[in-house]
Length: 153
Length: 153
DNA sequence: TTAGGTGCAAATCTTTTGCAGAAAG
DNA sequence: CTTTCTGCAAAAGATTTGCACCTAA
Image (cartoon, rainbow over all chains, first blue to last red; front, top):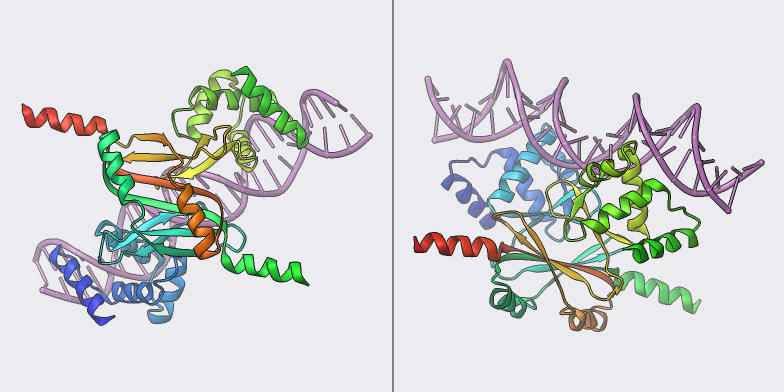
């Protein structure tokens, strides 16, 4: 945790930015909720516990800055709000999303499934791939199990 | 073209909705611009040529209705506006996007690449897949060629 | 006649921006 | 001191909603 914050601090400083208390509190919230896909509003509410005086605009500015630095990934699941995800250090391990249309949960799976496809895109379409995003919509294992139980009763 | 409109009309009527002149004009615009990924505002401007009295709210309502009926797909490329895409009749031929980070173009490719992955998700993760979305960010063939020419000169 | 539709304007919601003051190097 | 950063409030932009009127089975 501390090591990752230190690393982000250095990334910021190397570009002339500061790791202010507000930014540090924001980063801590993101680290503590790495599994989730928080919206700016979510982050704001959680950061307020650590730094009650923080403003929503500062959270937006911090998230934007970290996105530009590729510390975060800004994404959109179609529910009208942007969500943010810490990028793992190994930038070639993309994560894909399993979005449950029933309970709204978002699980992540790691995989390199797409590498063969990317090679094919470069070869057949002359498209130089920089990044990709793969989301599946469906019913998650929790909701599947819930349904099964109801069927039995 | 007329056949596809007729089909959509029947889909609407089977659920108690009507294909009003405004809705028909909207659908025609979508059919005529099937290659593009129009925003609601884009559609509104184009529909105005055919039906100048139409209101923006009606366009939004029509796009929402057609999305719910799975005639359209509502999507988000991260530029702050929702974009809409006609779904091909064969619902198992998903299209994927090649988004150029340089010129902003969005090309589509059709493929069933992901079917094996979907089977694996059902088996290994107990996740029942309903739909998926696959987008690649990178440099498109046009920009690649442009760069090549500049290198030569 | 009744449910579905429409245009307009107002409301809502997320995100961005202008600004004056605060903090850090 | 000079640049970066902050909180606040206002603004901007996209989308939704309330409402009175309209229109077709």
